Length: 435
Image 1: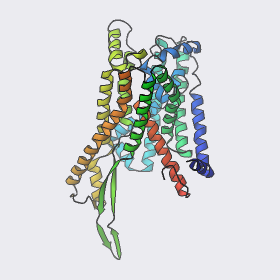
Image 2: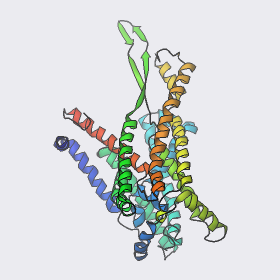
Image 3: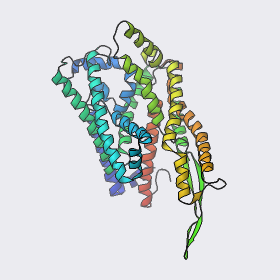
Image 4: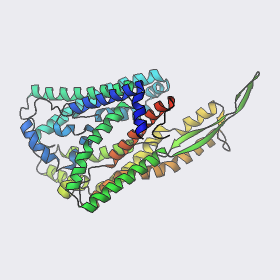
């Protein structure tokens, strides 16, 4: 294993890519520690302790690497870009113009990427405006007003700074993709999550007994192994191409396969479901603090947020609803990613067929049948990963900050990055991590 790391730095091109990626990581972590102007830093120090007692900031803090607790210029993190990317993918299903752009190849993808950037900035403007209001009325930090100078000039400064921070993160991610190693956006999320692991383990150790800590840690390791195993699982559908004779040349006749992954949707269903579960809490934070607003807020906090252990362990309704949403979004997103009718048309147009299956409608039904069968275990596996850490927190009444989405992202991104480094090493006849 040590020889693999030595070989990574022997190759000049690979070494430069790795060092460049690490430099971008350092810039990102520096920006996560720089607070935005116009914030009361003295009140912020007091508010951090209060924030640790609420599960409200869990998802936001996860993807920002703790930047939301510091109210830094990177407070919004990469979430606006993730939201914009998901919206563009969903719109591509219903808008013919976007579908045609996707089919144009590289030029069409560049146009969609540019639109995604514009949408990211728009979403960042909306979120930064909302967050600034919540910082002022104390909804984020249990009544602590972090923007006492709530004037138009100061508010605009905070909004513009946070929006520019998101645009800078988006640019840093694209730099990693172009000049570094791996997918830039995924690696930025990876760094954000990994930076929170020491504090999450510290909270878990401080609020649990030794046997509980050991059980939770062992379950996390088992989930990581299972994620790697399931992520590599695929169903290979054989495709046979008919043989054609043109003059003295024989074309076609070869056989290949379509790899259908068990977890075709990736981590997107878990992000969807988790975001929806936090949306009622975000709405409740904007409701009046008395009368009907207080009743609605208390009901949401008691049933859809957390209970016990300082307010950090999840409730049973939250766990069950989260699992159902993950299964639903897995089927939904898989249907978007893989269209059996389009795939059957492509196979028939290229002169191919599935052995034993007639081209046309029979091929579509065959692909739909296989897709439904492999999506079921994939969705159940995602639901298990998403709810098991929360269920342990509910069972032991302890705060388990290591969510299923964090385990999925860290394992998946690490595996994909290792594959890219592996391919670079194998090209130069070096042994890799997986070979």
